[in-house]
Picture 1: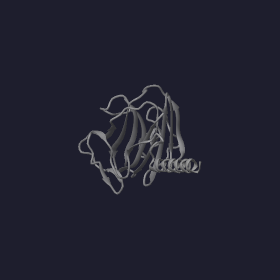
Picture 2: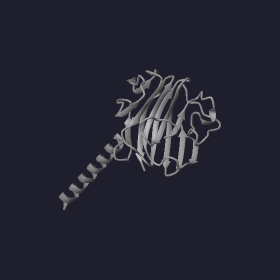
Picture 3: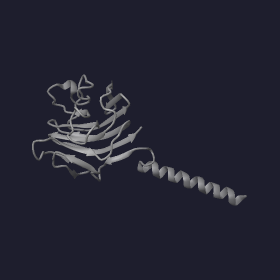
Amino acid sequence: MKYVSTLAAGLLIGAAGLQFSSAASGQGDGWITLLDSSKMGDWDEVGKANWAMKDGALVADKLDGKELSYLVSKTTYKDFQIKAEFWTDEDANSGIFIRCEVNKPIDAKVCYEVNIFDKRPDPTYGTGAIVDVAKVDPMPKAAGKWNTYEITAQGPHFVVALNGQKTVDAQDTKHASGYIALQYGSGVVKFRKVQIKPL
């Protein structure tokens, strides 16, 4: 009897240890890491920029040609949450494109564009907005600091939060599923972590 209870206690301790280690590594909770501070991840590039890993972040600060550059996921997603950590300078034009119906070309006509663009001429669709779908007022500024986007797409319902503040809560039915893309347009753009959790 003593052997059985010792064995049961051992199994419980082992299970608790396994549960802790998988929680600590971020596995088993449904989140998929697309890039982090140590690796760029696996993307298709559309357009060309000087994307490179520097000081724990994926950085671009120059286009190679006239076309904007996009890193496009290999997989399509329908309903999901995204957590993304990014840094930009004041001149940056970037964004996270979601539910892109095709993997090229990428633009706001075939995707939803969650914008990162503090100097956008029309600020109603600047940083924190979904271009041509959900305006933001007042537009938050992202330049010069690390920020976190939390983006939820579930059916026709979209919620965007920047640094914990909700900027978008909108409905739209144009794009039901598709690729994820990170944009480089101008300035200095850094992504430190991008994760997605299918819902």
